[in-house]
Length: 238
Image 1: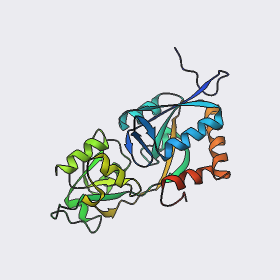
Image 2: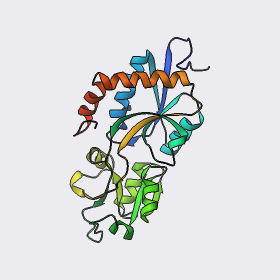
Image 3: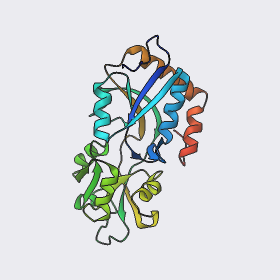
């Protein structure tokens, strides 16, 4: 059975979305439900489009490829980097995110005061994460894992020295990995564009992109986007 897509005269319409399972506070699974800032934005978009939102949770590399190759599938939460820019239609920014490198406090052998110091250590990161090209340009060695949870397991065992994460979600992430916030320590910031987006593959019908962009623009104008950001983040969208 073919799922009805937005842009066709079918009822009920469906907005299909795809994401990963651990990206606090943007998208994560809790109590068997997909939650987060980006999820709330996606739900509001679907509501304004008169559509039903369906979210599939898969490993991040697969999520990116699915949205890139299949029409009318929205992927989140997406940083716009040169390596991705031409692969998607971009909706947003929906919010902004900082990325810092974290270490285990008990690791006295890991001393990072500058981004150059990080070159002496191994960074664990999720495969296809937007920070990986930045680390390559900085000369920082990276060991990838299929998910942030498996990445954190390596971090706890000392198989990687540092991991990147957003301060707004790091406490929840630590808890997911059976660590406490007191067991990890923020070191240095990884500088890149802080904006985060939704993305649709280039084969998505232009009418769907137009409708989603219009709905998103209305959310910005009536401050709905700002209210959703306030719910999840220490600072509102810039």
